[in-house]
Length: 232
Length: 283
Image (tube, rainbow over all chains, first blue to last red; front, side, top):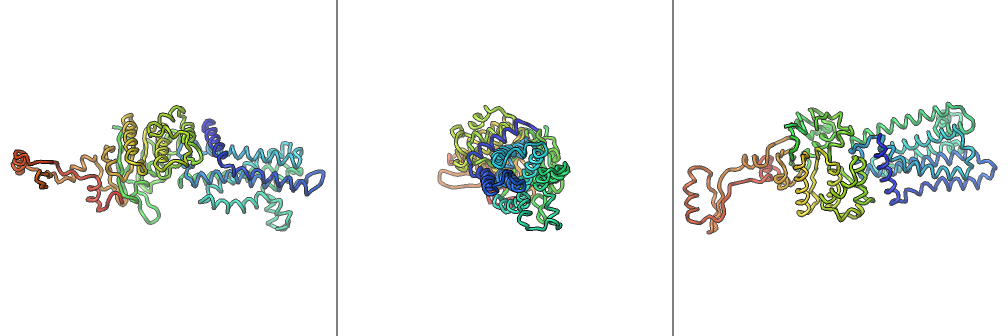
């Protein structure tokens, strides 16, 4: 791993992003969502399920969405081939390209958390869960970008995955599936649901389940990267 | 002499179709090697195998003493440069910012940017956004990107295809200087004049198979009829056999002061390719 190469990729991405400000718009979505929910709920304490709809949505739209847009553009315009062909390692490329996404996620998360009440998030378990959620959604975005054939096709992938993984608490809230059925129990194991459980006093096992999801996403991202290295 | 590239019996199949059929060749260190062939002949597939982008279906490959399994290493990547149809630039960034990224990825001092921009005749375009450049200028930035880290071996797939004759000549000069400094160049081109000018040896690739492999001079000699073509002041064009029996005839013409021009039959690489394969090189 080379910090010089990581910072070179980060600097390039930052310059590129500032010349393409459309990519910054998703950062505002969770903030708008938090403001809307804050007005609607009118309770002294923000309901955790609602907070995790915002957090899940934030990771899906900002984290997965930003890395997905940036990586799929690199893949479609064949600039990713230049990075892969350079001495930068796979880890240098992924970390370098994740830094802008990390900053965008952090900015959106801090502002949203300040709106819904940041105090409940400031504990080790919740912070660890948020880090795992960031990694999971980041790797999910990388995989989708490398898997899809074109930038247009990534949108088709982002929508269902965002809904399924990002807005999982909403699926329960809308009673789309029975909570006690197989689908409901399976959804309960999804990363955002495990983070919510942990937030509500759940055990460290939830972090373990989230770590397994993240490891799975890392494996898929690695396989997609190997494929991209051969496909160009 | 040490070999930069060693290829033995390499084939590549994509499903039912075979792109490369058991080719074998060596490229010596410091050599400019040209792979000539029409579109679809297997040139790009060959480059992709040599750079590790594709795996050969059969045969052995060694590049700079490394086997394909080692092609992904940082050390190997630092020693090769590549300009292919898969090469691309960041369109929203300037020429300087594009090259700066690659300087930092290859651990090259940033002063190299001005040097390489001068080599590709783009010193005035350093602050221009890539999306605003012409096709030929973009091609020269891509070439600068491929050469910025002074690789030991550079693969150039049609490097001057989008350039006007003046810029192509500038690039040819740059490539000759690069080669004089010890860089091995593996070049694919449609342009027979470019191949004849630059290459120490050329290989004709047709339908995935090598038809000929030798120096341009040796190939011209091999496919020459060796006859003298004589143009006289009276407008006659004579073809005279190159042999002792023709000596008197040539002496007579010279003595009579009738010879306006005289040369041996020297086919171009394009004519030789057509003769060997029945196909035009630029198809």
